[in-house]
Amino acid sequence: MFSLTNRFASRLALSRPQTSSLASTYQAFLKRMVHFDIITAEVDGLAPKVLLQINEIKEVKGSGSSTYKLKRLSDHYSCSCPAWAFQGRGKAPNQRSCKHLKGLLGNEYELKRTDEGSSATAQAMTDAKKAAAKPSGRGKRKGTDTATSSSSADASSSKKRKVSQDEGDAVDGVDIGNGPIGADGKPFKGVMLANSWKLEGKKDPAGYWMSEKLDGVRGHWTGKAFVSRTGKPIDAPDSLKKRLPKDVQLDGELFRDRDAFDATSGHIRSGPGGDWSSISFLIFDVTGVDKPVEERWDMARKVAPDGEMLVDDVIKAKRSCVAFLGQVRCESKDHLVKWLRDVEAKGGEGVMLRQPGSAYKSSRSDALQKVKSFYDAEAIVVGHNKGTGRLANACGSLRLKMANGLEFDCGSGLTDSLRFAFKPEVGKIVVYRFQDLSMDGTPRFPTFHGEAFDKTEPKDADVRSTKLRAAKKASEQQQAGTPTESESESSAKKKTVRKSRKKE
Image (cartoon, rainbow, N blue to C red; front, side):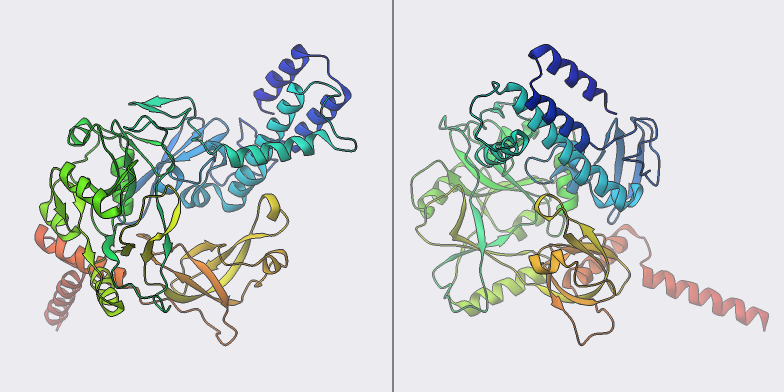
């Protein structure tokens, strides 16, 4: 068992006499812990597919040319991929996983280690600590179990306190314990988030401001440092920070290129010592100012060293730019659709709409809308991943297999009736909707749409970005003087013909 168990037991024994309530709570805590064997890395007797020694690093091939490092750290693992680093708010490192870890260690092993293990262990530890700190016989309602009431209080508390898991640390002027402090001396409250605009709806977009939706990493400039949309510090180089104002807070995106999220996040995670020469900061808005959006934009244009730039201009510059992202007034729904198609044809993600005269809100708002195309495709159900928490005895997500053989998980869109019945069953063909394909060919943000009762075989979507990536790769190979795949095939055929002629 974890050495932490013995230390915690000693702390309880020294802190105060164990009451029957405390003893029962601690016993429940021990029962709920999964057993992680430090020597064999087994979790409740389940062994990983590959045994890594403590601090051992293994490199795996990611999307495209990316390579990621998997490392074992005592009772948990880490991965250098963006999915592991940018996982949901409040997740401890030993509760995180990713497709690379699942592929190396095994899907079943990772589910048990993270979902059934770490979350239960963390919750049990919290319950026992609360019971230990609570005065005996006080504040307890009749017929209420201590562990249950503590768990409810902790759940309620976690909703009120939305702070970074790096609580207590300070990075370059950002006080994570109390929230990042902005140029106005007030704590960072979060960024403005967009709702989805329905192209098939009746709402008229005429008069709204349009800009290209960027596929980068959201960054908020506090006047001293960059933080993410959740308030976590982004360690950027001084060469970039020196170009930004000290008395204005800016909301924007750290951007490299269209369809390049993996590469962008990889550069950013490398820290100030990495290569930021191609990372630009494109400004959306000025925060902490009670003015209409157009007046805030005028402020942004004045403090942006490179002025106002469209995405095409930033890409052509081939350097790190700090600019205000160009805006275009929408004339009609047809104008919006044409703009969206033009952006997508270049490999862009979509279009953002901003309501004229709107205020900045540190929350999701109808004043900011995102417009994106979606693809529909079919896949076959090959498994069910068990859920956690409320869905501990239900299906957390479907394991789906595409027509090309790639597999992915899809949980969004499933109703409770389907989840608790573990439906659709294995072997069924289902329809899913997604925004785009990731670099490894699996769908980004897939959503279950329903069962395809009239289908017997899955069918993949014809995705625009796949063609664009192939064309871009061929162009880069030609510029580098490397033969393309088609040229290599043609050359191989010519050699075969020559050999056959010689034999004749």
